[in-house]
Length: 80
Image (cartoon, rainbow, N blue to C red; front, side, top):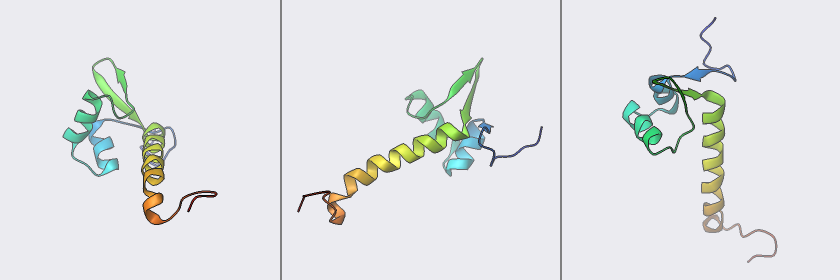
């Protein structure tokens, strides 16, 4: 099997997830302990689906965007 981190179904360990997100591995471990980041346990191992991580990032960015839109001058239909 080829190592292809761009594959949609790619599964990462903690170090790979940290590298992918550009954070230290202890940040990933903390997110796992708080059950904030999507992960799966396989025995003692914790693994991360690239697709699940991408969807998690997208959902969080949409939450932040909806909070930031009024400050950027966008108030939706009929709002002024």
